[in-house]
Length: 186
Image 1 (cartoon, helix red, strand yellow):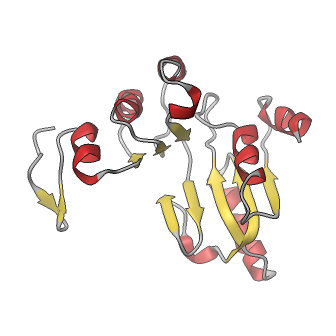
Image 2 (image 1 turned 60 degrees about the vertical axis):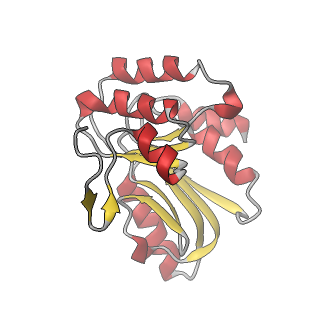
Image 3 (image 1 turned 180 degrees about the vertical axis):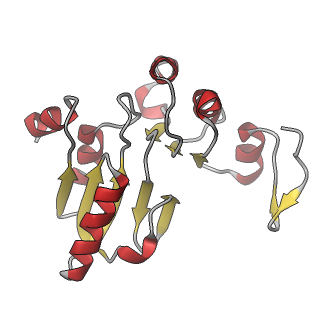
């Protein structure tokens, strides 16, 4: 706020997400703000009509994320913002798009999806796959926090409907029930 109308690296700066979405027709947002401001940033993106948001921020209080989840219910499911994260590395479709902090050079374009909580385990999987000549359709880090925007099951459903994905590597971690829920769904 207060910087609207300026430019940075040749790009316009806006005071609000709503201003940015209106002026640029943006459909995606990435959140890199300190934990106390992250929930409000996610909700501001939803209110601005943003359809896809990646939240990199780590350490968002669980109560704040519960507030975000509750807030999203005001939108019809099909109109709701798709949230990846928080505490995630983001999402990459090699050779096409990156939203996050993933090292693009380790991803070979291909037909195998990756979904995991840990960014570094996802990087390792992509690196080993590349070494074996196996390419990635899309890699999604859903985040390691207890309450996140998209679950393993949510992402597996998207991969199932993606014509560019033939198989999926799911990288689970100890703790929580998401891995078991995904296995029951599959």
